Amino acid sequence: MARKLKGVLCLTALLSVATCKAPPPRVHHVAFVPPPPTRPADSAPICGQPEEINAFRIVGLQTQLMQIALSCSRDDSYNAFVRKFQPQLETQRTILESFFTRAYGRRQSHALYDQYITQLADAESQYNLASGVDFCSLSKATLDQVASLSSTDDLAKVVAKVPVQQAMDVETCGTPGAPPATLRTKPLKHRTREYHRRTE
Image (cartoon, rainbow, N blue to C red; front, side, top):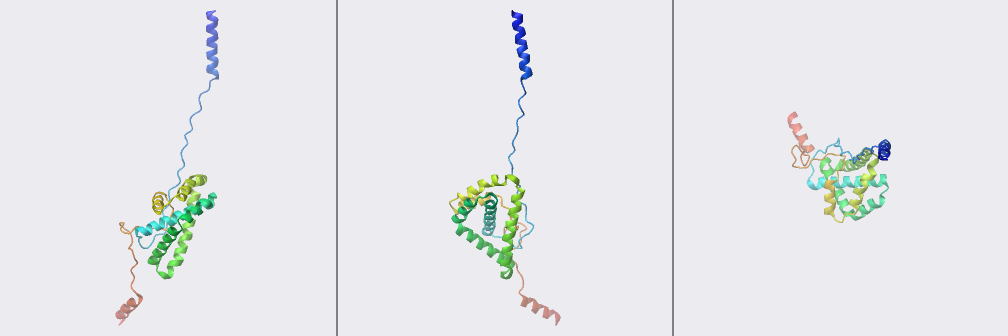
């Protein structure tokens, strides 16, 4: 009887081993990290003061949020952000216009500012494409976070943390190797007078 029981137990053990399958290997999910912003090909001829650098960042962030709204059907969150910070956004654009006037002169500043805004939208669009199919799922949190802000100080903190693609490289004044704060050119009449002296 003991032999039969032992045989049954052995047979059961063998069948269990034969039918058991090894557990499937664990799948490690790697979180998608969007590519960092690329350095713009264009550089400003002058350096920017801290408030101007901040204006570039805020206008760049607004453009990025607009691209998110258009690509991911999040117009409601974007419109809420614009309504809440409308005065601040207009102030930042005025600061940028003043920067372009100082950098390029009144005659060219308006056209070059408009050109910059167009290039900024295109740069943001290309950055979105580089983020791949996960762009909307990754960007939703950013848009919701900005739409829920309650003060300008909170906006400044977000701008400092969120990577934003730019269309122009602007060095902060005081940074080693930065261009001058203004473009110093001789008035035309002075150059003409100097030319006449040389030719007399």
